[in-house]
Image (cartoon, rainbow, N blue to C red; front, side, top):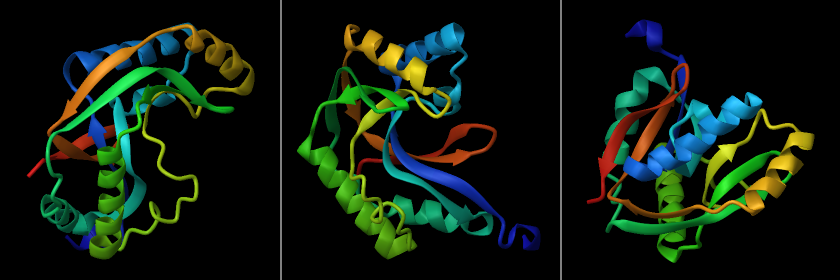
Length: 184
């Protein structure tokens, strides 16, 4: 275990889509890869971020998992996705309709992570919480962004999502679900 001391990995916490909803969003990301070579969004499964990426020591990964097992997710979460929107000039996303329970979950989780795990990056983020499902980002350049923004304004997407759990993702070669945590 001594070899892991002080080595870190990147993690984040999210609601990961499943079933037909996951397939629909992944198909959009794959389409953009095939048409334009955009692969940034393909590095993680379709998700709504609850706590943005952070570094954590590998030799303490079990503590991270145990602490998240102790967090109470609460009741099942029903969310609706309606069409697309963007964060200019680099992100196209599926728009998650505003939901007070989702906002509350984010706030309570950020507070729990700050107090229990000493993770401050989420509460220091002045951009605020804007739940969304990324379709294209990081490798999307400005000229193509404006083209895709216009295209996606005329496209439609309707998803009804139900979440019974949240997930801890870890960056290996790409982001992968390390552990799922049930709602209660």
